[in-house]
Length: 130
Image (cartoon, rainbow, N blue to C red):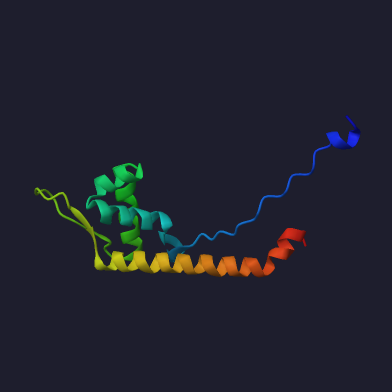
Protein backbone atom coordinates (compact mmCIF):
# COMPACT_ATOMS: atom_id res chain seq x y z
CA UNK A 1 0.00 0.00 0.00
CA UNK A 2 1.45 3.35 -0.97
CA UNK A 3 1.64 6.33 1.37
CA UNK A 4 -0.83 8.29 -0.75
CA UNK A 5 -3.52 5.61 -0.74
CA UNK A 6 -3.47 5.27 3.06
CA UNK A 7 -4.10 8.96 3.66
CA UNK A 8 -7.60 9.98 4.57
CA UNK A 9 -9.23 12.82 2.79
CA UNK A 10 -10.11 15.76 5.01
CA UNK A 11 -13.68 15.54 6.26
CA UNK A 12 -16.16 17.75 4.47
CA UNK A 13 -17.29 20.45 6.90
CA UNK A 14 -20.86 20.13 8.06
CA UNK A 15 -23.31 22.54 6.50
CA UNK A 16 -24.10 25.55 8.64
CA UNK A 17 -27.77 26.14 9.38
CA UNK A 18 -28.90 29.42 10.94
CA UNK A 19 -31.27 29.34 13.92
CA UNK A 20 -33.04 32.09 15.81
CA UNK A 21 -34.27 32.07 19.37
CA UNK A 22 -36.73 34.80 20.20
CA UNK A 23 -38.58 35.68 23.37
CA UNK A 24 -40.49 38.64 24.73
CA UNK A 25 -39.58 40.55 27.86
CA UNK A 26 -41.30 43.07 30.08
CA UNK A 27 -38.96 45.32 32.03
CA UNK A 28 -36.05 42.96 31.40
CA UNK A 29 -37.98 39.91 32.65
CA UNK A 30 -38.77 36.92 30.43
CA UNK A 31 -42.47 37.04 29.67
CA UNK A 32 -43.19 34.86 26.64
CA UNK A 33 -41.23 32.50 24.46
CA UNK A 34 -41.43 29.21 22.61
CA UNK A 35 -41.44 27.09 25.79
CA UNK A 36 -44.45 28.93 27.20
CA UNK A 37 -46.07 28.84 23.78
CA UNK A 38 -45.75 25.04 23.75
CA UNK A 39 -47.24 24.87 27.25
CA UNK A 40 -50.24 26.98 26.24
CA UNK A 41 -50.79 24.92 23.10
CA UNK A 42 -50.70 21.73 25.19
CA UNK A 43 -53.25 23.18 27.64
CA UNK A 44 -55.46 24.13 24.72
CA UNK A 45 -55.27 20.63 23.23
CA UNK A 46 -55.69 18.76 26.51
CA UNK A 47 -58.18 21.07 28.21
CA UNK A 48 -56.28 20.53 31.44
CA UNK A 49 -53.04 21.82 32.95
CA UNK A 50 -52.45 18.40 34.52
CA UNK A 51 -52.84 16.57 31.20
CA UNK A 52 -50.75 19.19 29.41
CA UNK A 53 -47.95 18.58 31.93
CA UNK A 54 -48.18 14.82 31.33
CA UNK A 55 -48.19 15.34 27.55
CA UNK A 56 -45.09 17.55 27.81
CA UNK A 57 -43.36 15.21 30.27
CA UNK A 58 -43.14 18.05 32.81
CA UNK A 59 -44.38 18.30 36.35
CA UNK A 60 -47.74 19.92 37.03
CA UNK A 61 -45.99 22.36 39.37
CA UNK A 62 -43.56 23.43 36.63
CA UNK A 63 -46.29 23.98 34.02
CA UNK A 64 -48.58 25.77 36.46
CA UNK A 65 -45.66 27.91 37.67
CA UNK A 66 -44.64 28.93 34.14
CA UNK A 67 -48.21 29.98 33.36
CA UNK A 68 -48.59 31.93 36.61
CA UNK A 69 -45.19 33.66 36.21
CA UNK A 70 -46.10 34.75 32.68
CA UNK A 71 -49.52 36.01 33.81
CA UNK A 72 -47.89 38.01 36.62
CA UNK A 73 -45.25 39.56 34.36
CA UNK A 74 -47.68 40.26 31.50
CA UNK A 75 -50.44 41.48 33.79
CA UNK A 76 -52.90 39.37 31.78
CA UNK A 77 -54.70 36.12 32.39
CA UNK A 78 -53.68 33.40 29.96
CA UNK A 79 -55.53 30.33 31.25
CA UNK A 80 -59.04 30.07 32.70
CA UNK A 81 -59.66 27.15 35.03
CA UNK A 82 -62.79 25.54 36.41
CA UNK A 83 -62.65 23.62 39.66
CA UNK A 84 -64.52 20.31 39.91
CA UNK A 85 -67.31 19.11 37.69
CA UNK A 86 -67.45 16.13 35.35
CA UNK A 87 -66.17 17.93 32.29
CA UNK A 88 -62.62 16.90 31.39
CA UNK A 89 -62.09 20.36 29.90
CA UNK A 90 -61.19 22.19 33.10
CA UNK A 91 -58.68 24.62 31.61
CA UNK A 92 -58.84 26.75 28.52
CA UNK A 93 -56.85 29.57 26.99
CA UNK A 94 -58.15 33.10 27.21
CA UNK A 95 -58.71 35.07 24.03
CA UNK A 96 -55.52 36.96 24.90
CA UNK A 97 -53.51 33.74 25.13
CA UNK A 98 -54.83 32.44 21.80
CA UNK A 99 -53.88 35.74 20.16
CA UNK A 100 -50.42 35.78 21.77
CA UNK A 101 -49.66 32.20 20.73
CA UNK A 102 -50.66 32.88 17.13
CA UNK A 103 -48.76 36.19 16.97
CA UNK A 104 -45.66 34.71 18.59
CA UNK A 105 -45.55 31.76 16.20
CA UNK A 106 -45.96 34.11 13.22
CA UNK A 107 -43.16 36.35 14.53
CA UNK A 108 -40.87 33.38 15.16
CA UNK A 109 -41.51 31.99 11.68
CA UNK A 110 -40.94 35.39 10.08
CA UNK A 111 -37.66 35.91 11.93
CA UNK A 112 -36.47 32.43 10.91
CA UNK A 113 -37.26 33.21 7.26
CA UNK A 114 -35.40 36.54 7.43
CA UNK A 115 -32.45 34.83 9.10
CA UNK A 116 -32.31 32.12 6.43
CA UNK A 117 -32.54 34.70 3.63
CA UNK A 118 -29.80 36.88 5.15
CA UNK A 119 -27.61 33.85 5.82
CA UNK A 120 -27.96 32.75 2.19
CA UNK A 121 -26.76 36.20 1.06
CA UNK A 122 -23.63 35.81 3.18
CA UNK A 123 -23.14 32.05 2.96
CA UNK A 124 -20.04 32.30 0.77
CA UNK A 125 -18.30 34.25 3.55
CA UNK A 126 -19.12 31.53 6.05
CA UNK A 127 -17.99 28.80 3.66
CA UNK A 128 -14.66 30.49 2.88
CA UNK A 129 -14.02 31.49 6.47
CA UNK A 130 -13.67 35.14 5.68
